[in-house]
Length: 169
Image: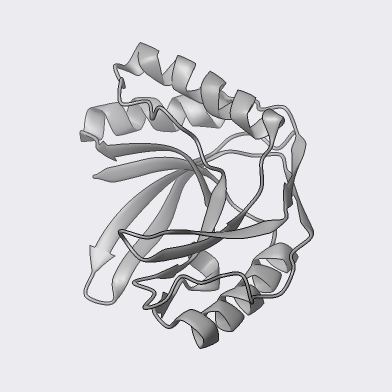
């Protein structure tokens, strides 16, 4: 099964991000991500065997992360897959990303990305990725919990199921 570790925004922020996704879709086209799917991926694990998934569920359920805040303050895009996103730099998130990958090494995961770009994907397959005329962003995302998420690919896109959450800080 395809798994990843993510931060999931609180409901109010998820709704605000959904509104931004609607604005971006009107400008850029593409497929809007459903509000319930919005997240920040900290570690994409790929295909994971059931036995390892069970280990990860126990690990995440016991993992405490330091609470923090992430400031989302700009638009961006990844041209090749046609993704439009919102994000922001954060040294606290970079430290969390690094520590999660350090611990994942004990499970045999070695596909740590060389560069971490904290972002929330709002659109996929955008026909245009010009984000300069989209409204200015200044949002704060308080995070206190990490989620282990399973990804299902269906005809109309990916669906996500949370398998485990860390204790709320």
